[in-house]
Structures are given as C-alpha cells and as structure tokens.
Length: 168
Image (tube, rainbow, N blue to C red; front, side, top):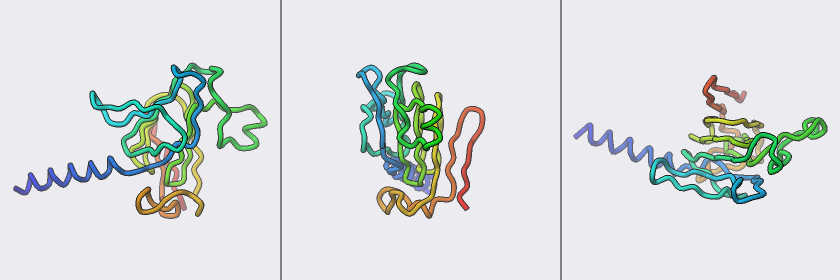
C-alpha cells in the first residue's frame, strides 16, 4: 500500500511539473513553411509538433526545434543582441524564448533545446545565446513561475558540460 501511494505521488508530481509554464516565445523567424521552427510537446507517438508562434506558452518538458542551415538567409538579427553585437554583425536567430526565471535564450538554426523548468534546460544540439538577468520587470506569478527575484540559478546542460549562472 505504501509503495502504491508513493508511486501515485510520483505520477502526480510529474503531471504537475509537466503542466508548469516555464516561459513564452518572444521571437520567431521563418521565411518558408519548411523552415518553420516547431515546439514539440510530449514524447514518442503522442508527441505533438506545433508551429512555433510569438506569444506561445512553453511548458516544462517542451522541446523547441529550429531548421535551416548555417548562414541561411532565413535567420534574422537577435531581438536581444546588445549594441556592441549589432555593430560587429548580427548573430543568426530563428527563435527566442523568455523564461520566467529571468533568462532569454536565442536559438540558432538547426537547434534542439529542451526545457525542464524555468531554471534548467538542455541544449540537445545546435547553438544558442543566452542573456540572464534579474530585474523586477520579468514575468512571473503564481500561475506562471516564480518572480525573477526568487530565482537563484539558471542551468543549461550540454553534452560536454553544464553551464550555471548563480544569482547573488
């Protein structure tokens, strides 16, 4: 009976985590239907492949996939590039997601990026650019994640290493 209760609690916790909103799509660049970035929700045969759109909510467990080839004409300047980056050339970005923990992540072409939570994500393949900042203007709240001042760290996992930003 105790094992069944623990198993049920684990399933409930996974379901709750699965429904956790972790961010919002703030930029999408696609010039053709074939190069349309997608959001993959779920796994296996039940996975949904949804066209990525501005304003789309990203849930824990979702994966964002961009298409194209390096240097393709379908990429655009980053919406979060700094003035120094803009003057030295733009970085190719196909999509950007703003996480409720205070980070904005720009995804280059041919990138797969999984979001476990607003604090932890995984670069499966490809290239990304992340800007992590803590300010009172970040999105948040009880239904969408913690206020950015509550965030203590942001981690991006890669095949080679984990990158962690610790907020002071």
